[in-house]
Length: 121
Image (cartoon, rainbow, N blue to C red; front, side, top):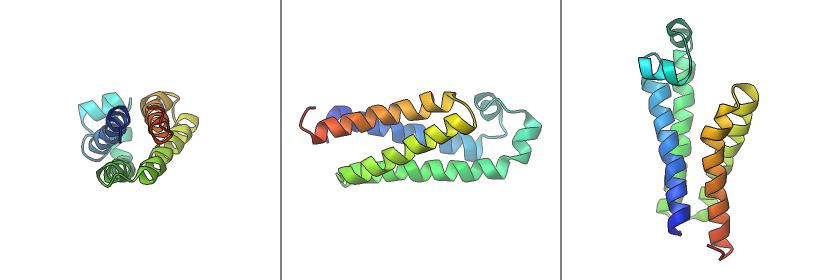
């Protein structure tokens, strides 16, 4: 894969690995509380749900890295589309901020992969 596309896909994977850590391990800690604008009480009652979310984010990161490692652009495209759908749903159901943090990097990576596949990058 091209350098720009690879860097953008790795960035999206790194973001999702970071979300895994935040949601699975730091949800009830100061960084998790601040990041997700939660109270300690709400975080404690939603801890298990957040850990499940984190696990799914880890699967997204793993899928993106797997696609890169095996140079299967169709796998990378699939997981980028999954991230974009998750970002759209998160923006609709939770906060528009999710679209910018999660969706914009995935869209940029998808465009870069597409441009690369079309020979324009």
